[in-house]
Image (cartoon, rainbow, N blue to C red; front, side, top):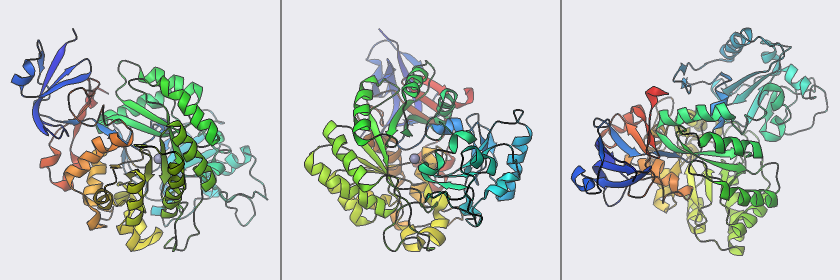
Length: 547
Ligand SMILES: [Zn+2]
C-alpha cells in the first residue's frame, strides 16, 4: 500500500465548511486522506509524520483562473514594464519610468546580441504611465535600423515595432488600410499595432510568432517556477492555440515527475470557425491528464480599457477616445455559444468594456433557450465595467465571473482620471456587487499582464488601493475570507474543478500553498507581503528555494 504522510502545520486553513481549521493533514497517493488531529488521522494505519511545516500555514493550493503560460516564454525577452517584477529565477527587474529608459535598456540588450539579423523583442511596456504617448517606429529606430524590434504592451493587445520590422512584414508602404494600424503624416504605419489582426503579420519578424499566445517547452517549465513562487497549484492558460505540436509538448512537460502545477489551457477562438473550434475541443477533452486539462474555449469580445481598445457603452471613454474594437463579432459569438452549449463545451469570454459584457449576455440568452444547459458555468473574464444590472443578468443566466482585481492597483489611477472617469472607476471589478448578487466569483492576475500572485490579487480586492495610494470604490471591497475563497474554491468553480481542488478535504488532490504567516490574522494591508515558502502539488513538495 502507498505510504501515508501526515503533515503537521502551525495552522491549516482548509476552506472546507465543516472543518475550516485543523492542525494536521494526511496524504496518500497524491490525494488528501483526511484532515484533523494527529490522533484522528493515525487511525488510518501506518504513517510517517512530517513536521517540516510545523512553523507554516497551509492553505489549499491557489487556483489562478486567468493567466497565460506565455509569461514563461516572455521572460526570455527584455522586460520594459513600469513596475519592478520578479522573473522565474527570482531576480527582480526594476521598472522603467520613461521611454528614454526603455530605449536605453533595449540598447543595452542590443549591444549584447551576436546575430545581427536576430530580432530584439521586449515586453510589458505601458505608455499610459508616460502621458499615454504613442511610441513611434522612429524612436525604436534609435536602438537599431537594421534589426527588427518589437515591444509587446503589458495588456498583450498592442505592439510597437521599428521600421525594419515593418519592412520585413511588407507594411512599410503607403495605403495600408486597417483600423489597428495607425498611419503617420507620411502615410506609412506609425509603429503601434492594435489587436491580433494587426499584430499577427509582424509578430513572427520580431520574435513573437508563437509567444503571443503559446509558450514553448522551456517557457512552460519556467512558468511552473512562477507558480511555485506564488503558491499556485492549478493555473489556467487562458488563450492558447493548442496546435497538435503544442498539445504534445504540454502533455509531455506536465507529465514530468517534477512539473509542479496542473495547467488548464483554453483554446482561443481565433483562426477557426465556431464549428471547428467546438469539434476540436470535443476531440481534445479525452486527452486530458492529471496535470493538463483540455477541452475548453476562450473567446475574446473586445480589447483592453487602458489601451482604449475595449468596447464601452455610452458615454464612452472619459477622455473622448473613440470606442474600441470587436475582436469577435456578435454574430460569431452567437454561433459559438449555440454550438458550444449543444456540445457541452465550456466557454470563457473576455469582456473588458460594458458594451462587450452586454454583447456576451445578449448572445448567450437566446443560445441558452435553444440549448438549455444546467450548470454550464460559462464565465465572463475581466468583465471589469459590469454594472449591477449586468451582474443580475449573469446570475439569472447561470454565469460566473472572474474579475480583474489587480487593475485597482495597476491602472486604477489612470481609469479614474483618463479612461472611464471617477464614477465608473469606483465600480470597476465590482467584487462586492458580484457576491451580493450571487454570481460565483473568482479574481485574477491575467499574468503576464500583471504578475502571477493570488495573495496580491486578494489584497487588491480587499483594499482597492491604487498605485498612488488612494482607496478607489470602497463600497466594492470584500473581506479577507471572501478573497481567500475567490483564489481557491471560487476559481476552481469557474473551471468545474471544485470537486477536486480548491479546498483541503478528503479525496481532493493534495495541493497546498505553504505560507510563512496566517492571512486571516494578518493586517489586510499586508496580505500581499505574506511570504510563500512554496507548494505541495499532488502530494509532491516544491520549496521555492530549490527552484
Ligand atoms: Zn488574459
